[in-house]
Length: 294
Image (cartoon, rainbow, N blue to C red; front, side, top):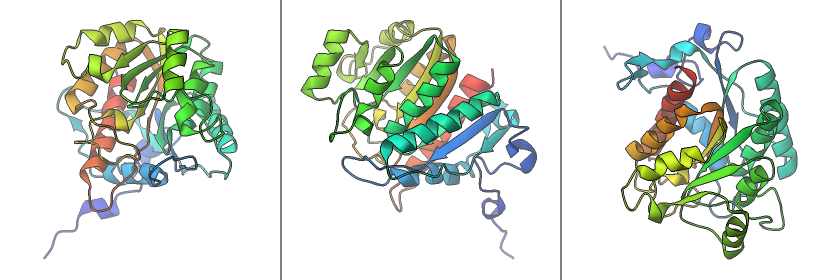
């Protein structure tokens, strides 16, 4: 007689957790999925990212071999997907309102995207709660355009909108336009370029990058920061980028600061290719452990 795969009977939430660990009132961590890709500039599909990450997470084994812990015991509640609007600004405003409520309830915050423009809505809520906030923007792209496609709320403008609210440090960058380069130089924004850091395989830059941040940090990760060899499932991939262990090493150093929230954005699942889904889900889980389970 065939043995049934328990995956198919697990609740549809991050980790497939039982009610006692996934209940909102009980949970310490909230997963906030936002399936939006209204301003995507190349390949659409990041609207399917949050669901794909959650689906893969249901069969991720939660004993962490490095820390020897099971982080799911903190309690992880997965919210219903945010209902999006046709207008980018209105959707970002809804992200802000939802994030504000999650923070008011005292929950640890994880947003799953969806396109990167959404991050500015979350950062606005965090900045209100934490006036000394700074943002670590880990991405292949600088995302420092003032306007993109005639809009201030395009995904290519997200770091610029965040910078208007608080200090921003960029890491992993290997793609940007002339006007963005000029703005970064004029404003003296700290940038840790991939060709000066990752390509040289010298990790001393990591401590310098962390030192540029304030004591309270919001982390935003565009998954195209990873090398497309391990993360092809993004809309605008760029050659080069972080490998798995280098990214984890860098983000573990961020634990020297108080990380009050993070997001993992721009996942665009590829039909028939499941490895990226598991990579994204495992990254989210690792970061929950690193920032919220110490």
